Length: 70
Image 1 (cartoon, rainbow, N blue to C red):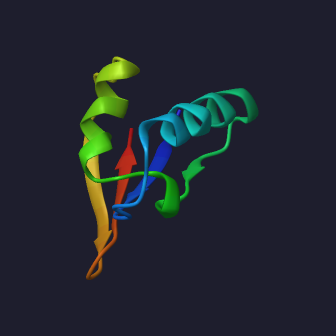
Image 2: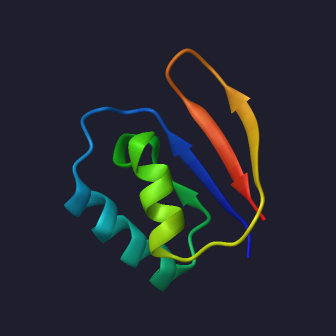
């Protein structure tokens, strides 16, 4: 399963990320909204879901990075 993760908004809190993870897994949504995921939470998300997968940086703008996990 491929997931695209956008990071970059510093206003995110952990419980929003947890709720988003549950919603994403439940509905199978490939996109995690930038407004709900911090750069610092990318490692947390990967570790929490035990991803042993490659991460590719798709694009980078001034405050947003988009990763593809395969």
